[in-house]
Image 1 (spheres, each protein chain N blue to C red):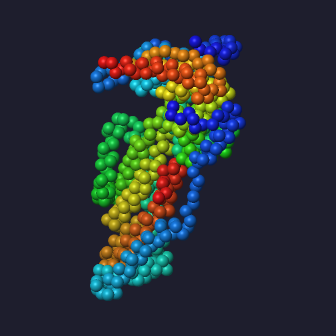
Image 2 (cartoon, chains in turn orange, cyan):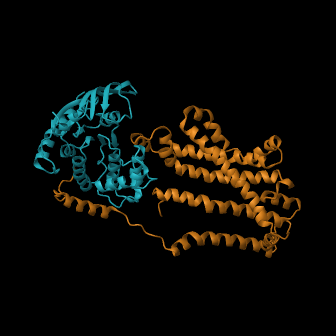
Image 3 (tube, one colour):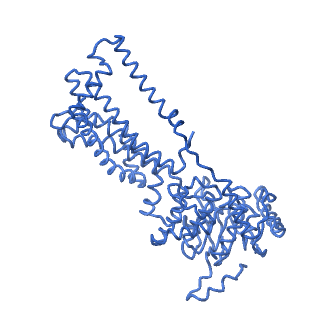
Length: 298
Length: 264
């Protein structure tokens, strides 16, 4: 025992309560809110400037006739006109919705399959030994590779698209959950067991919430893979009866040698992918980390 | 050897339970690089209802191993351990779940014990009041100081309403002033709730400050080396002369135990 000389005698409980309240007050950190100005200059301004710079360079390439062939590089305003026309004709939201609804429902399906699969691999030794390596190997297989067999097995229809999305996203989601479970501190599992959380109760109350940070990272990656797989499927297997999604739009542009339309499709694919990540997955991840004190403000 | 004041109520029941924990001839060995390594050797120890016992020993005496066995987290190689219901366990690290608030951590313990939903909130508030953290229900674990976290962990352990509370060096990571305050709190709560405590520590003064009985374990393998009944009236202070005197005596004995290991 190092210091016995520092504490003041507090024989009666009233004194102890006061001492304790003082300690609590001294050791509790105050929360500070970041002012909007700071958020603006640190978080919003830099990416905006970066995007504007890219647009400026692009416009300069066309204006100064460095690339003087609209079939190779259309100007930003040409692309804008194509987008505006699609909007005015009422087609734009249709393109986006066709792809997004496919992407999201495929992702939800992947979630329903990947979650129990990941939990099984993480918790059952035999299952992990059997399919763990295959599952992580599948992540490095480009999902484009699944398009030809999926077309042959299922034909040119929506099921084929969903199959490709699932093969791309399920391994990511399952692997995310597995690494989330592997990173759980053994202390939480022991604490859970002494509280009586064993078996399914332990899985529900301890394992799943403790694995949430890794799981959410897996979901984020799973969405990126879903979106990529879907675009690959739409480009390769474009078929008029399937409705025009963003992938088909890109393929139609190529067939018509309409570079502005190709650029329109690429930009929309990029923007939708980023938007879903920014609106759904990033806030989810930040909320999970912040509520656990894992998000350190720099 | 144990103080028997709290045993008076025991004859009300049909079969009086005279022990909160009974450890009989318990040995434990682990597979090591040089074959089976004996960690605990023939430990026999009782904890009476309402008694506060500290297990004291240098590193390598298997204190935490013994606590894990009593908690049911591991099986002894030989011997028997019986406890009056499932014991609660508190660790050196607070082990609070960071995805829940302080109050919800306590409510989870209540839920797993089968307390109906309607009563949990009130019960949790009551337990937070017991550790003097009224108003901390909605606080996240990372928003609390080290001492506050251990008090929430204590409240969560008490929520199990076990007859026996096992504590594995729960204050070792705290600063001296906070630890001193928590000693006072633990003594007060122990006396209020009449729970039996088996408290593991390597800190002699802490052992004497808290316990009615101090059990010294020898190291490699762990054996019960000696026991002392501490007759100093509570509330004690860690700097009391009587506490200091007994600590000196026990420290001498502990040093002797450690010295034996340097002789071969």
